[in-house]
Length: 253
Image 1 (cartoon, one colour):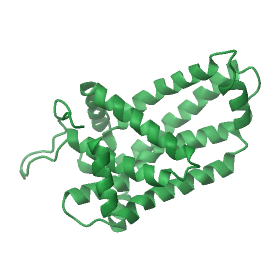
Image 2 (image 1 turned 45 degrees about the vertical axis):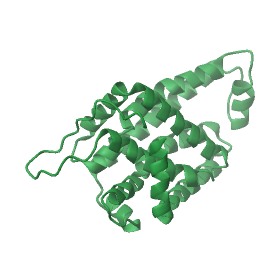
Image 3 (image 1 turned 90 degrees about the horizontal axis):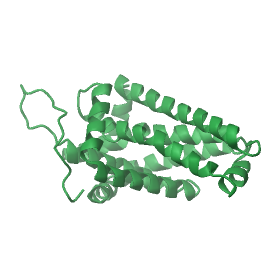
Image 4 (image 1 turned 60 degrees about the vertical axis):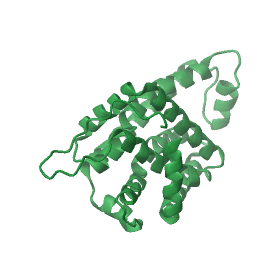
């Protein structure tokens, strides 16, 4: 909860940039819904890819929190500098997340197509024949499979993206460090995953307008989740950067 508290502190200091990120993602989500509202699998694919790639789009928020941590006065120029750099590591990570989203949509489509009692062509068909169908466990199986596929994506990215911004480390090393974080701190990371999912669903459920507040809150908080485990190395010009985490999170996290 301290991560969320620090996030709101950052939002209050830089509200235009913070809420601006949320507004941009909310508008993007609305455009996706308008484009694919009557085509269920296109809509499912668009929203899945949107949710998985959103952490990459929130990289500017990590940069803002990092600048505030250093005592700087960040703004849109801070965000622009991150994107102008065209960091290949961030691009690669975004491609991997998009591939994971595509894999989930294909797996989901195969599951529903094989076991749904009727062809699923629209979101209403999905609600009527899958969600509201009490004669089968298809919806529960679909949710369990989604969770099973989402867990490794979360474990791979929970601290990897802020680490890529903060340290000169390769993508695979950052992913392994992220997995180690989850293995060393399973309970706090499980709680954090549920909070991220819960707030995201609330933001989407509020006609996507809720993302205006949810995106900056989770973006800034993700930076502090990373920083609690990977504090900045002590100033030593000759010492290499280290990605060695603390053994565990403080109890307040």
